Length: 192
Image 1 (cartoon, rainbow, N blue to C red):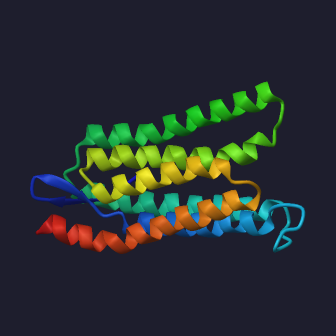
Image 2 (spheres, rainbow, N blue to C red; image 1 turned 180 degrees about the horizontal axis):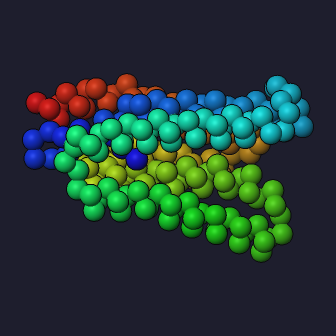
């Protein structure tokens, strides 16, 4: 989901609030999982707390992004077909991920596989969707963020225990914050 600002004949995206809110959700949520993970966690958090922090952060980020996108749509000249297809891609991507993870858990017979595949698979799906959004809106920063998130989330599968979550929190969440810091520069160049 992206914010749209009309500029001349093409649409320019402003993703700062989206990047900041999702970056905070990844840092806090995956960071909480990292701190509380394993037999000897750094912080003893009740089981559902990390999931509530991540889920709550993601819901808040979705609300922030959705509200900003709604405001921007009223003033922008975005192609409704592109916007609609990208929005549907989020539902389709996460629906497909749900089916894959559910099927693998069933076939392998280990429900713990979900704790490995949900955070990494979600990062891959988000990364691929940002790649598509970057192409659709000619946004190299969004495209680069998508590439980084997809690669980092895939690579996280090679890490064990809390390290998987540390990688997602720091390299994933940190990349969102870096993208938010670079966004004003990209917008200024696009308006020039």
